[in-house]
Length: 187
Image (tube, rainbow, N blue to C red; front, side):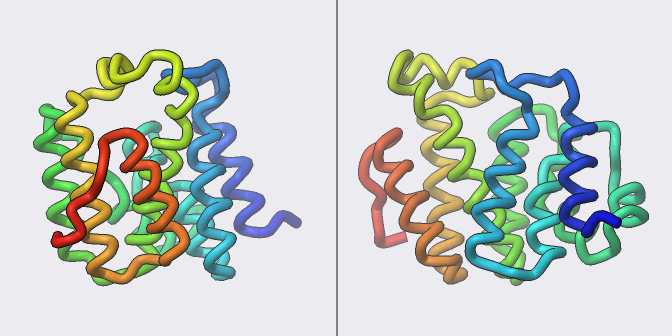
């Protein structure tokens, strides 16, 4: 019998079957797996790692809260729901601002750590493309460089205020500096 985490890994592989990442030729499940690994390194609670693995499922696939709750429980489904952007908001920046607003109100440090890990994984995943193409990569992600800088920095600031895991936060900060320049620590 598989563990819950093993079942979640199988589920994620199934969810993203045939889908490729935008800047390389690997399965889209790679990013959630990286995020889950980052979280597993700082937290040994299986449900938190499972939520990290499933963090994009509601946004990216046909599966919703109910299916996740049925398969993995209410705690995981609640966390995945908290981690999901409202895809009914059409404009990219408006959707990101709504997500940031919700995260500012979130008091679950596990959710905040998953957000940091997810954003870090996004930056790490696009790094080779960034080295080759520079700022042209922003054409592929939905927002301008300035809009992305705003989003990544806002998430850094809120995660710092909420005392997200210091190792994740430091890695995240370093990647933001590489992409966008210094961070105003006054925030």
